[in-house]
Image (cartoon, rainbow, N blue to C red; front, side, top):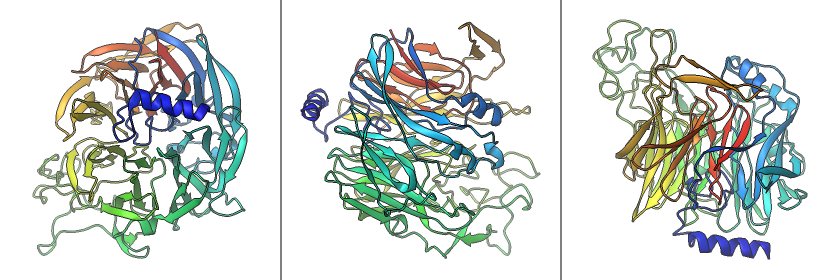
Amino acid sequence: MRSLLLVLLLIAACGDDAARTCVDRWLQWGGDHAHAGAACSAGQPMARTVTKVVIDPFAAMETADSDGDLLVHYQVPLLDGDNVYTMTKAGTYTTCNPRSGECAYLRNTQVWAERALRWEGDQLVERWMFASDWKPEPFLTFEPMFQPAIAGDFMYVPGAGGSVHKLNLDTGLPVTRIQPFGATLDPDTYVAGAVVAAADGSIYYNALKLNHDAPYSADATGWLVRIAPDGAVTTRVYQELATGAPATDALCRTAFGTATPRPLPPPDVDGSPTLPPEVPCLSQRPGINHAPAIGADGTVYVLSRAHAVDRESFLIAVNPDLTTKWSRSLNRILDDGCGVLLPATATMPGQPGCREGARTGVDPATNELPAARVSDSSSSSPVAVPDGVIYGAFTSYNGSRGHLLKLDAAAGTIVAKHDFGWDVTPAIWRHEDTYSVIIKNNTYSRDAMGVLTGPFYIEQLSSSFASEWRYQLTNTQRCVRGPDEVVSCVDDHPNGFEWCINAPAVDKDGTVYGTGEDGNAYAVSQGGAEKGRVFMDMALGAAYTPIALDAEGRVYAMNDGALKVLGR
């Protein structure tokens, strides 16, 4: 009865799946299976912090170990009426510096749990907690994502060995553990990235098996997993999904090493371009943090990369039976390197741009046309749109700004590109008979002292990626809230702060919500005017976090390991 009522409410509020433009229940990454980040409600004025919930008690230690940055990809809270579901951590934090590679297996002393809360007045009161046995991949920098999803009366929570725990949503009690890879749980097989629920109740997620002693130099195996509504499980190996990908033992181009004389790229030899060395590609496997996206027709969009070389990446459209619909290589698809985004005039080491006379459009690190890369450091996920799929890939040659790509639904043809895509799952605002795409747009150039110079924008693009408006984050004050709730500030960021949002949200009126590294949550109205802001707890670097809105228009944002609910 509860499930039927929720379905009827959703249909009444938002229409059928093909026409749906928004969500009243934020049930997974990006709100729904398309990851559009669009709420049916109007966001409340962010006049105050309604309540605060600590989700990561280790945040201060993690920040200290990372030289002031919080290198964690946090779960988006799941919102269902008066119910709020969020991750929390327990166990023990083991000190390590992620930038040094020390953290590979040391994160395993922590415990990731899902916590169910319910609104009682202005307070969130705990209902239940479920401690998972999931552990993160032994990734060297950012802590990988732990992201459940809700489907009907159940929550699907990542577990150990590539398994998923199916929980009763009301009680938090386990219904079953779904084990696609046999009765024995292999500790070197991981649920990689977010669990996703389709409109028909099917569950999709990625699994990844790594070599324990050499996780990123020995080969790996990746799978796409589907759990049907009747519980039947299907898996497909990524090397098979990525049709047209190089064989495991084929050779893939790397990048020029530090021993190659600068400026790059090197000069031609006998009229031919000098190219970097090759290594065995190893197998195709999923990006560590991404969430598969599902279109209105049931097509599943996933990201794949060669285990050894992320320039050999693919965006793949998969049918619900896990057969490949199309597979699009992202290698050498860009042409805006030397002489376009980068001046081809450098004659001395250290000069900006490319070596004088470099071939037009090439990536100086490879001397080939640039690749759009599936980075394991990024939580950027595909977003299904009415006419295709959008993805924010990583590129380093344009100041590590990445590139946003749009591919059509029929064949995966690239129909639009934009010079920013780093670690952002765009929000989609549908209006009239079209839609707009909302991203962050940071410039990561630095001055002689190593300080970021910006500018830093929230930007709205048309469906063809023409810029519609920008809002620049210009706050110069670095602030912190003390234990006594007194906020103290230092004016030491003359160029402003970058946007740290990795999945913005948009409400029914087109108001955009995002967070900055200055510790503020912002509301920006259509046209790019600031509508409101709330300071949370502290200015904090590299905390790439999502944001969500519930049916009442309350705004759920994260800062310093805490979830803050903002509203009137």
